[in-house]
Amino acid sequence: MRKIIIDTDTGSDDAVAIMMCLREPSVEVVALTTVSGNVPLEQATLNCLMSAEIAVGADHVPPVYVGADRPLIRDRVHARNVHGNDGMSDCDLIHPTVKPVEGVHACDAIIDLVKKYPDELEIAVIGPVTNLALAMMKDPETMKHLKCIWTMGTCGFGRGNTTPVSEFNVYADPEAYQIMMDFGVHVYVGGYDLCTSEAAWFDEDTERLLASGTTAADYAVRCNETLAKFCLAIGGQRRIDLPDAVSLSPMLWNDVIVKAVDCVSHVCTEHNETYGQVIFYDGGMLAGMGPGFEQGYYGKTKPNCTVISQIDNELYKTRLEALLTAY
Figure 1 (tube, rainbow, N blue to C red):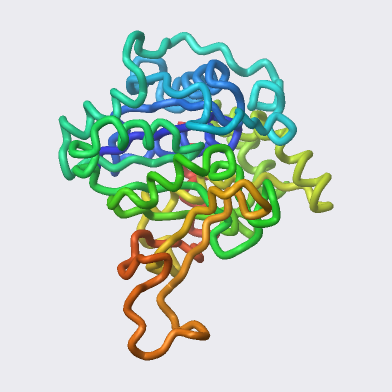
Figure 2: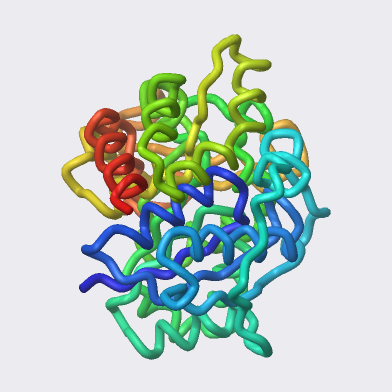
């Protein structure tokens, strides 16, 4: 069975992704790690614990390790205006009975698990990638044996949600994202552009989930109420965009992928209007590149990532709903 780590800054969309992965029988989530992002680290950890407990019950929650409370270089940024002060719509939902592992930083937990499962372990990074970057800097030899990385990050081939050209998870720690993308372990990217159309939950979806009467479905809808209001305010339509769940669906179900593009990438860490942008290039001919062009793009001649550019929205939503309403 495939073995996965989920690294999360648990806001409301992370919560749905966590429940989706923990309930999917084809993978084993061997650990969860938390990082500052949507909300500060302590709150992200509480939200992670609660979401996992709702998903599988307190006795079956994988180990949860607390990680970085700030980005590598830049000041902290949060997204409380999108997810609420507690990251979960301030509905008094967060009362976990389980506790995180004490005395082991998430960075070290990631390294130890790669040593335990060399060339087998995958990591799903659905927040700023600070923990993973720290592990790569601390023990690069071990981390080269990470099988692959799945990330909810970047704009994909669309526009940003934090600046016109940057997505929140990258913008929160671009320097860490650059380390991850240039490290040499293949990265599967699910960008923000995947979640902004029919992949979202609309009123008919949330009504059906609530009507199921299951605790997980109720929690998933209620914790995203602030997000639904935010989407209404900025787009004129009430819906729940779920970037983390959408972006991890190809990790769980290969057949939801409609189109994926192998690319080279460049992460913009210059402190100007492009800060946090990730540029993808698919190898096509550009103006000024003659037939003998061999230097690649930004010095890269081979793809370092696969960008998921289209998924089967209905198949993804059907499977997610089945997991949330199963019990």
